Length: 146
Image (tube, rainbow, N blue to C red; front, side, top):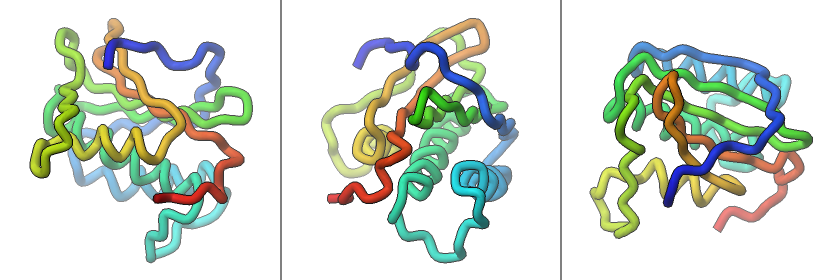
C-alpha cells in the first residue's frame, strides 16, 4: 500500500491528543458520542458505523502510540456524508508498517481491522508527521460484518 492522501475537502469535527494509552477510553467514548449524539453503551457490539469507527480509531491510535512518536492526534472529519478518521503521530520519516502476510502475531491487526471495517484506508507523511486515515460511509449502519 503506497502513500495516499485522504479525500479532499474534509471538515474537521473533533480532535483528541493522546499522550499515552490511558487516554484511549476517553477518546472512544467521546468519538462515539460525536458520531451518534448518544453515550456509548457498556457492551460493545460492532452493530453500527460508530462502533466500527471506535474500534478502528482505537487500533490506529494504539499502533501509533506503540510504533510512532507520541503524542498521537486523532481527528474526526466529515467528507460529504462520510466520516474520515485521521490518526497521526510525530514520526516524520517512515511510513506505517504494513504486513500483508496476515500471519497471526504479525502485529498488524490494526491494518486488517481498518481495511475490514472501513470503506477505504490510506496513509501519508506531512510536516506534522505520519498519518493513517480511514473512511466510513455514514449510511453504512446496516452493513453486514462478515
